[in-house]
Image 1: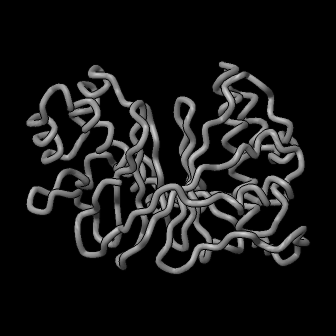
Image 2: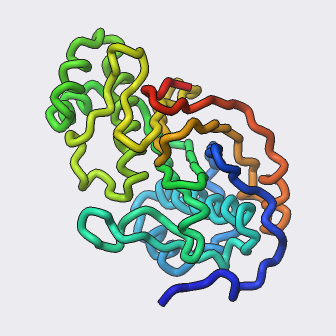
Amino acid sequence: MTVRHRSIPLPYAPRLSVAPGEVHLWALCPPADGTEPQAVGELDAQERRRAAAFLRPGARLGYLHAHIALRRLLSAYTGIAPGLLRLHRAPCPDCGGPHGRPVLPGRSGSLHFSMSHSHGLVLYGVAGSPVGVDVQRVPTARTVELCLPRLHPSERRELQRTPRARRTRAFGELWARKEAYLKGLGTGLSHGVGDSYLGVHASAGGHRAPDGWLVADLHGCPDHVAALALAATAEHRATLRELPDVLSTPAPREAVAEIAAAEPVLSMVLPAGAPSRTW
């Protein structure tokens, strides 16, 4: 059954929109004091079950913070109260299973989003076409050694030529680009990490993106690597904003107003027809 959002009353007008040629990025550093968020009731039953399944309290709180903030962020774009948003999964393009891209039923053609969180940092992407974001802590040398055989042969050769002092971060950046792209596709890692090449493009000094996609590294945090992938062939501008402390604001309407007032802190152009550059 198709759920139509027009049957749900809008508590306020949408405060944010993504114009053609834009992609919005949002960064969140959840509180690290172990405080239980007040707005757990805005999550649906499935999200609460998943949160309860985490064995480590820190992982559970990280999940709650990331998903409550996601709902409040999407509320700013839709005008639908966070607790009324229905978040579903599109069919996987590989197998048809219900584990593809996250979608808002009834709005999948106009608003796309992605979320990634790792070790105290959450990254969100919002766009008018399929989008994927990934953030993760810089891997260890042991992780690089274990994962290297899974890469595309050209990527392996490039990393093996990378100076050892730079290799773990270079691998992390590559892996983040791959995860962002596969999230944008909606397949996740089941698609095959080594099937698509997202390594260094020697002739242009950037990174090669698969046909129909714009891919870029996102820098700014010494302990993390991050990337963006967008289903587009025309030039886009990506803007990054810091998500306000919406987790401590009990009223969703007030949280949405704070989100809408946030100003961009960084901006970059994703050029068409060329390898994507780093932020």
